[in-house]
Amino acid sequence: MSATQLDPARAEEFGGRMIGVMNGAFTALMISVGHRTGLFDTLATLAPSTSDEVAGAAGLNERYVREWLNGMTVARIVDYDPAKKTYTLPPEHAAMLTRAAGPANLAGMAQFTAQLGGVEDGIVECFRNGGGVPYSKFPKFQDLMAQMSAQVHDAALIDGELALVDGLLDRLHSGIDVLDVGCGQGHAVNLMAKEFPNSRFTGLDFSEDGVAAAQKEAAESGLTNTQFEVRDAATLDGSTQYDLVTVFDAVHDQAQPAKVLKGIADSLRPDGVFLCVDIAASSNVEQNMDHPLGPMLYSVSTFHCMTVSLALDGAGLGTVWGEQKATEMFAEAGFSTIETKRIPEDMMNAYYVCRK
Image (cartoon, rainbow, N blue to C red; front, side, top):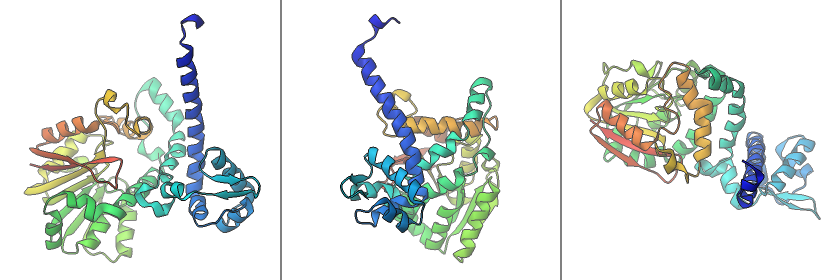
């Protein structure tokens, strides 16, 4: 295309947008550092402070803290008083960047930027030759997911997520058998087990480290109504029956999601319930144009969820498999009633309540 064919206004707008993308990408790395070092949490407790004062309060190196503060200043995240050389984190920003914000904390999400960037060489190779990057190449991913999901579960698992299923809380109090598939580090299982001592909980995951962390948390909490197994979810065959099966953000990256869903359906008693939590999006890209996290979701899919499935010669559903595809697959697995619900504490996920 020659220069005379370019729309100057469109080119200028796109150039500005690309600069914003680049600035945003690097700012995300700095936000991740602020989360990991506790700088946002420290700033939220301080009056306007110099870099020396911030570093001292956080127990960190002043020169690094000063550079980070300046980066946050030009990113319009931290306010700066040039006359006094003091920095302030506005309370409106702290409400989205500190651990005290719970599920509203977006800073923790920024950690995925560095984690996923570390596998870029492998992803580029997959573009050329197919296949996938195996789960073993993501040593911190499960920890990050555990942090993210814990924010939601701690705030809303009992009274928000489980309460979406009519009558479920009463049944859990009375005592039922519960299976959590892809339990990760088992925090959701242990929260439920503590709240409902009359019910019996099993968590399974193919990660030995995840199961070990789940068992450790259960032991530290003195729980006697949990058990955890290192097991591939695709081996579920209905030989053990449950009243409730849960899956929290773990279907879309399975190698054999259809087989997993069929195994879950077969493992439910006649009056059982399947509560599946997964990314809220459309299966149609044109309907995700205005999704607030659309670019991030497709990127996370490319750099993790899709590729770990393809590494096992799997289906490669991807993060944005979407509500239409999810509903279709639930029906094919044997669920005749499928309800889609949301909770205000969780901006990321849809909650599917499925019955046979």
